[in-house]
Amino acid sequence: MKILALLLLVSGVALAQAPAVQAPTLKPVGTVDDLMISFIWPASDEVFYITTRDLPKTEEEWLHFRGRMLMLAESANLLMMPGRAWDNDQWMKDALRLRDAGTAAYVAAKAKDVDKIAALSDQMYAACVGCHNDYRPNYRKRPLTPEPLP
Ligand code: HEC
Image 1 (spheres, helix red, strand yellow):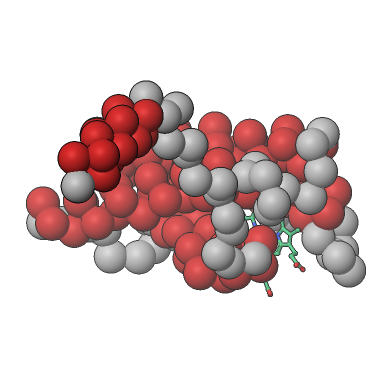
Image 2 (cartoon, rainbow, N blue to C red):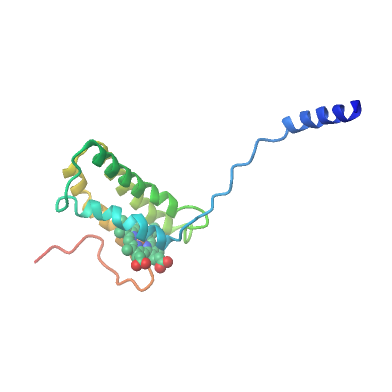
């Protein structure tokens, strides 16, 4: 009995000196397509159409809007995740453009600056089209900035 207690004590000490727990491996849950459809597309639409849709009014609506802009910016990080990124080169550059545009939208949303968000439309559009030109299968290539209306 005494020996058992001693053994437990010793092993307890050994456990306490075990190396720190390893961070869990990042594991994608949805596909790139899932991210596009579930939040990148709807959230960016809120940027593109901010002046033609109902603007957030209450504090709560602004909080939710801000959250969706944060999701849009963070989605670029998700696109760059190991196991989801399609390569380690151009894909990352394209995703960073989305992160820049999303970050700017998030900052403007925190300031409730509707004009600023509307002005980000071209930058956001270029971030989508840039990557789609490079990677989206069967995508009809488009210029990075919308053609001016005749
Ligand atoms: C870093 C690359 C990248 C960026 C940035 C990106 N996309 Fe995509 N997107 C893709 C790829 C790749 C596909 C095709 C995925 C597939 O077929 O599996 C796609 C597909 C889509 C689809 C098609 C979904 C479907 O199944 O019909 C939509 C819509 C879309 N993206 C919207 C957007 C919007 C809006 C933005 C900008 C706010 C954006 N994407 C930014 C890479 C990107």
